[in-house]
Image 1 (cartoon, rainbow, N blue to C red):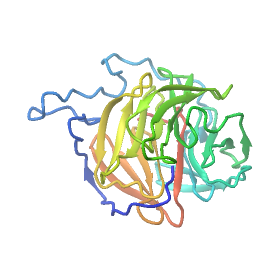
Image 2 (cartoon, one colour):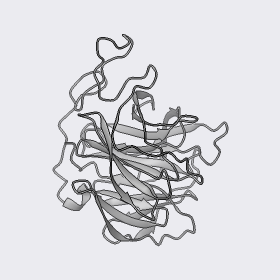
Image 3 (cartoon, rainbow, N blue to C red):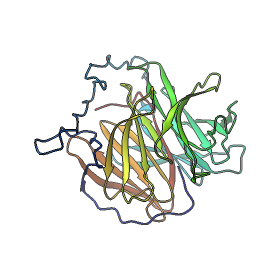
Image 4 (cartoon, helix red, strand yellow):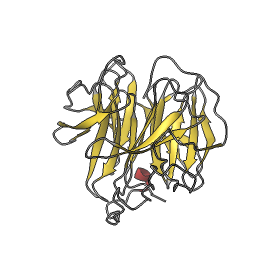
Amino acid sequence: MVVQAARLLSTALVWVLAGCGARTGLFLEPSSDQDASVSAVPEAGRDANGEWLPDVYKGDCTDPSIQYVYVVTESAHLYSFHPSTASFALIGTLHCQTYATPFSMAVDRNGVAYVVHSDGQLYRVSLANARCDSTPWIPGDQGFLEFGMGYATDLGGPSEKLYVASSGLENPIGSSTLLGWIDTQSFALHSIGYLGDAGMELTGTGDGRLYGFFQGQGVSAAHLVRLDKNSAAYLDDTRLPGVTLGAGWAFAFWGGDFWFFTAPTDHSVVTRLVPSTSQISVVAEMPSEIIVGAGVSTCAPEQ
């Protein structure tokens, strides 16, 4: 996702997560001195009611290439990102039939990327060679012109949905933002509910969780929220001190960790959140490029 003006703030190498008001943290059990209204956060593998989710299905995850993270830049360059080495590899340049710039991206478990541009056009993109094909998607359907996007499975897969969050950035004053999902066979949009914040990027997991990443209006730190896929409600919300979105932002869940791509200055940096230690560290950068979209398949490892 991209905006025109960057908000500058230096990013420290390591930060400890701080709570956001009365909202719960994503991964921390409440200590004895915390407010009694703060409830325990569901652990990975359990739903919001504490029930175990079905085993994650991986029988169709046979191609190693769909287990990487992929990113697209404002200049339409497509890269693979290898979290194990925190390194990028250029795949190619998108030549979509538009003069608009990429806005957001998602990747399905068949190795197909979907990239929405700033004019609302949605394209299929090959992760092998960056080939770009148009889709029947109608820009602006129910207000979804520019939107964040990410896949999450239906209770462990292999079925999954392409979730989308209308940005509200094209009309930030008084605009409403929605969570929905797009059927990539018919390209019909199914709205779910209203979101409380604009400019949200999405990522999902193989066990069916859906997360949003955004920077609240008038605050200096970004937020990571877990979303209810049926209502768009925030199940939990964690503030990320030191992470500023800047001119472009995206994120992905891979290997049990979150990987944030932000541009607090004139290029993108990669920040890793390790939930088990509640620490954030800058692990890589991309000189001269601003990443605006990231996609990861639900075949990617959860641990």
